Length: 282
Ligand code: PAF
Image 1 (cartoon, rainbow, N blue to C red):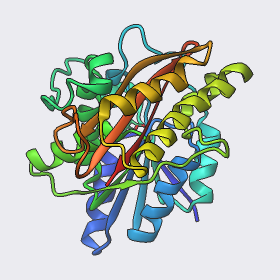
Image 2 (cartoon, rainbow, N blue to C red):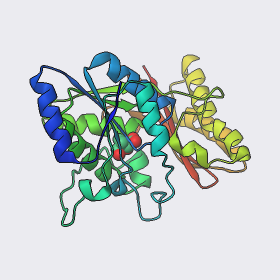
Image 3 (cartoon, protein in one colour):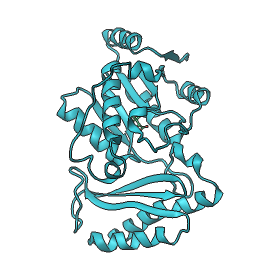
């Protein structure tokens, strides 16, 4: 199948209108490119569920802080495009920054409260950038279903909240984390890690695995679980904890005693690379 590339929002929306008129459903997989197995699982799911699969590839400047890795974020459009071909996507939407944020652009989407904690606390403005670009992608592509990865747990919760609060008629599907053999959650940023860092990066998933084991053996005290998780990271010379939290999956508030659906989320620095991971306890 031939994958069509769109650079212009207006012409993609025109195409979407035509597709919908023919009674076809649209699946959107928003990405920042440098696709890996995690993204592939979203595209495959969209291919199963919907008639027309759109993969957006856009490194969104609005979600990076001034000292963050926007410039060095890995990019490989050729590789991304051939992976989209392999997975039978219909459309790749790869706009230039000026297409999404033209001169005089001043409108942003701000999801409050649930963006003040976890990654939102460490990366001020990040979720404002994410919510804005995702809202724009929803308006441009009018998807029936949009697909996101569980690895960015807070992002998925923020986008669901935004869609509900703003009456967006899109279903959000969140797909499980895809991991490397040693447990490291797949991420485009994993390429930043050197060999030693790559070994130490395993500690984040190991700490979450330990948390699950503690929970399964009856531990419900968040403080005790977090202390033990922290010890796993502290053993690594190159790793530093950004946050480790046990929170309610709806409001992202800290939980002292675990009961009901709970998110354990962690972010660590390994050298200059920030990694995130999480598990849900039911
Ligand atoms: O998860 C990502 O890759 C990005 O945050 C997203 C959802 C594509 C928005 O830029």
